Image 1 (cartoon, rainbow, N blue to C red):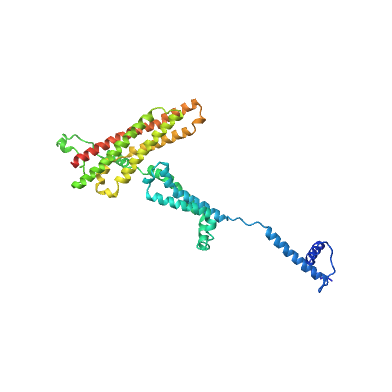
Image 2 (tube, rainbow, N blue to C red):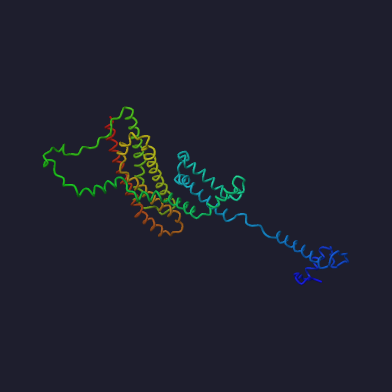
Length: 379
C-alpha cells in the first residue's frame, strides 16, 4: 500500500522507466523476482530516468558566448587607444612627410598603437594566461568598462585634433600684444613736438636704433651666426618666395572646372603647403632652438612678426580643402554648376590665398632687410 505523502507518478513515466531498467524493448514486462515492493522498484526507475533526462538537457544546452561584455569593452578601448597613438604617425604620412624625417617619438607611438591594436582582438585569450588571469585581468576589465576612462580617451582625441587651433586662436601673438599695448598707451603720452622746438638737434632727438648684432661675437661665433642667417635666407627666398608666387597666380585666377585642371591646381596648392611646412619646421624647430641660445636675440629679430606666415598657411589649407572637395564631387555637377562653384572658390578662398601670399612676400622682404643689417654688423 502506497503512503499518502508520496508524490504522484504518471503511469506512462513509470512504465517507461521500468522497461529501461529491465531491458524490455518489445513492451512486455517479464516476471522478475523482486526483493522489494513494486512501488520501490518503480520509484528507483523513475529517479534514474530523471537523472538521464537532466544529463540530456545539459548536453543540449548551448555554450555561453566566448566574448563577455567586459571583453568587448576591453577590445573597444584597445582599438581606440591604438587610434590615438597612431594619429601622429598617420598625420606625418598624410602630409607626405618622408619616413627618414619622421621624429623618433612618432615611431614609438606607432609601436604602442600596434600593440594596442593586436591586444584588443586577443584579449579573451590573454586574460586566461597565468600571468594575467585573476586580479590583473579583473582590473583591466574594470578599466575598460569605466565610462570615465572612455570620456578621457575621447577628450584626448579631441584635444589632439583641435587643441593646436584653439590655442592659436586664444593666445595672441607677440606682435598682436605689442600693438594692443601701444594702442592703450598712446592716448596717455603727450603729443610729440618737433626736435627744433625742444631746443635739441634732430640727431639727438631721434631714438637710437637697436644695436645689431646684439653683442660682440668672437670670430667663430660670427661664422656660426652667419651660417644660421644663411639657412634662414635660403628657406625664405628659395622656398617661401616661389610658394608665394604660385599662390598669388593660382589664387587670383579662375579655377579650372575640368578634372585635369583641378588636379594641377591641387598639386600646386600641395607644393605651397609643403614649402610652408618646411619653413615652419626648419626655422622654429631646428634653428630657433636652445642649442643656438647664444644667437636667439639676433635670429628672432630677423624673423619677428611671423603672423603673415601663419595666415598664409591657414589660407593655403582652406583653399586646398575646398578644391579637393570640389574635385571629389566633380562628376556629380553639371557644366553650369561646375562654373558656378569655381567662381565661388576663386572669389572666396582663392582671393584670400592670393592676398595672404602677397603679404607673406612682403614679410620675407622685411626679413631680408633685417638679415642685411645683421650681416653688415658682423663684418
